[in-house]
Length: 176
Image (cartoon, rainbow, N blue to C red; front, side, top):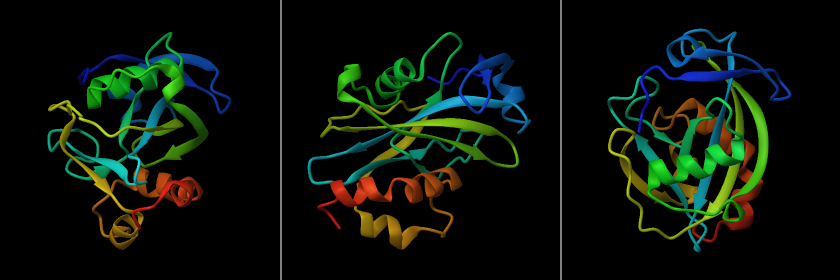
């Protein structure tokens, strides 16, 4: 569920907390780096679940994005945040050991700077998408994703994420 103006931690490049700010502040000031989590959800066939961001979202509405994405809360670890976000956005009650850490990187845009912690899991569904966050869920093959890159279908963040995780997609992809 979207929290309209929650407090978020501010972090340095190492992920150390340096302060806090309101969501409305970090989404308008790229100097305020805040931590987020992404989870790439694959099915057994190697297809990647993507979410169509709700048309009511304030950032990148109506674009396809990473399976799960969300802010890390105050006094919350990225590992705890990803478990919470998977449940909130997809309705999956997952255990921490079902979700594996892949990497961390900085994503900068004209409106914000995020320290992204990316995780991966395998799940077949069923999924219960959070209607305030997600308009649609769909599994995509690697070839379908690559055919749509650069066409303003995906969020810029997902396109950067996809470039970073292509090795993982190659290992998992049977549906190309």
